Image (tube, one colour):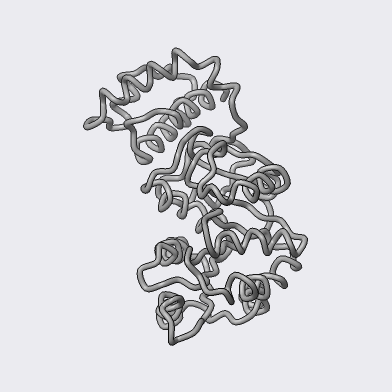
Length: 286
């Protein structure tokens, strides 16, 4: 199993290979755990065509610097007993999760929270804290993405109410985005749990944030949406949750502003209209 773990970690660092290709290789390794896998095997099984030279360069660099790389981080692979099994319901689960903090939080009941980055003053000061308080007190771990706005408020609400929180970020765990969340991310990494499928030094790239959202949606029993506009990325996360058979909770807002137009749309489409934490707990009891 050690050889599989090493190969998966190398793939997590590799450039020029898709998530689909990585998952195909992970499945192959599990079927043939004692077979050696060479460069040409990786290219063939991972269906690496368009970016073959980028992958070749990256793969050789990883092997040349392997001694330094493998000492840099804490991680679990998709074959580790601590890996959250609910992520295996994704089409292409992350093959490796890098982390800092308390990995035992992955075995707790979780609620994911997403929403707008630009929010009303009411959401910042009252709504998120009020609604999440009974959920946190019931022992649920709050999962979000450590972005501006609702993500930040949800992590802060969990901490201020004496609960636990998990941040799934779209950079490596040694990077901070946005910069103003440096202190919050440090608290989560030290006292809660910080997760990423990207190597620790990976910086922010646009495509990585929708990818991390699938993990946020998959980890929890349900996803609660606050102040999402009509074209909010939070609606994509909500749809990912629905596709996985999870419950989506939507918090209504002021109909005279655009802040919650996406939330109202979700409610019209059948999401649970959520005006208190008790609405979430009642749904989970059913």
